Amino acid sequence: MFFLLKTIIRPDQAPKEYQRAAAHLVRPSPWPFSTAISLGSLLLSSVSYFHFCQYGLFNVLFSLILLVFSMFFWFSDVVTEGTFEGQHTLLVQRALRFGMFLFILSEVMFFVSFFWAFFHFSLSPSVFLFCVWPPKGIETINPWGIPFLNTVFLLSSGATLTASHRMLLVSPTHKATWHFLFWTVMYGLIFTGFQIYEYIHCPFSINDSVYGSVFFMATGFHGLHVIVGTIFLIVCLVRLGKSHFSAERHLGFECAAYYWHFVDVVWLFLFVTIYWWGS
Image (tube, rainbow, N blue to C red):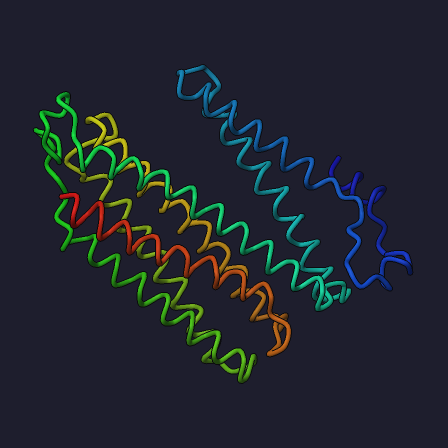
């Protein structure tokens, strides 16, 4: 059905007036609609799964597959428009950078809410927490174990990503550009693996007072952002191997770098506040 919609709504050749426009006039596409449907289905199916409905897990997996399917073809269209059709003019690139900036700003405010909740309960713990922080009975995680290792890995990933970007500006076809980006992806995967190991062996759960709730919500959503950023970098790694980037045109790489550095900075705040100071 989606291939039929794409064939009918989006012809292979864009009209001449689209190609002459300084700003890219986006052609009709089914992918925003299917992405919205899959996100709504994912929300409803997750709620049903949390309430132990019979087919809750199946619906969650189906919604995730539909979401990945829709976003893959949507992003493929964007890559085609920018790389092969030349639709991303300087004006369009400036607008996309500004859009990425606004997106990261919204993510910053998202994490501000978690830090706000943490400081609210930690600086003035209520009588229900026996006026102590961490709450009585909570065995905190040693910040100089896995959290410190993850900090080293993320900081190293930021350094290798910056080195890859520098090499891209000098020579996009240089092997060092691909190698530095490859190690950035590897550091992201190692971080995710250690985070899963930490969750499995965590001495408390998300149900253990407000400390457990804030801890798992803040670090869990950060881990989700690391996974998304890693996928973002893997796409850039594949595109770099296909010579999609040049020293003058590598907007996708830049957006991935902005997002990854944002993930690095958020983790530094998490490590200092929740892991070190909060324990």
